Image (tube, rainbow, N blue to C red; front, side, top):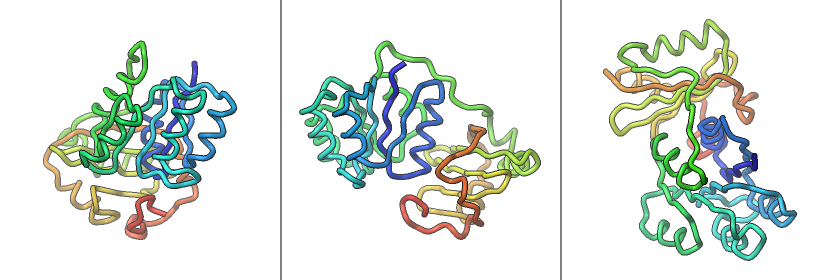
Length: 224
């Protein structure tokens, strides 16, 4: 199976998208130049997902313009816009994007966009564990990771809000809810009376050495 290329600078978001597509061969890069080099070398991709906020190596706009001029011109691509800007969507469409979605996006929206990108449309087996938070609370989820010393990611949603928790060997190493990070994010999610959670088990490679109390995370986009 030809791989799907994800171009994303945000380590956590990139790994999340890779997890969403766990039944597929996915290559994750954070550098536009590296992606261009692979395409020029005739590296086969069945689809490309690129965030418009990409700046490393070659920025997203330049990458997409170059894509049209090389062998990759026939590869369908999905663009993720860092905002709901109509201008961003129009720009992405003018560059040939088959689909454009805006951040923050819900998991079903992302999977629907990828499904539209790939032909024939794939089926997805998303989470290793999922359920309602009124039946399995945030505290119980955190205790599950602690007792089993598992690594992984938990997504929690309530109405239009969506937060994430990242664990490494049972320890919480990142918590985020929109603009809130660390303890503030955890406390707010713990107060949600209902909602849905989905958990992936396994290492998040880009965060394996990131062992810090959640309140220690910076306010940067990548959390580094």
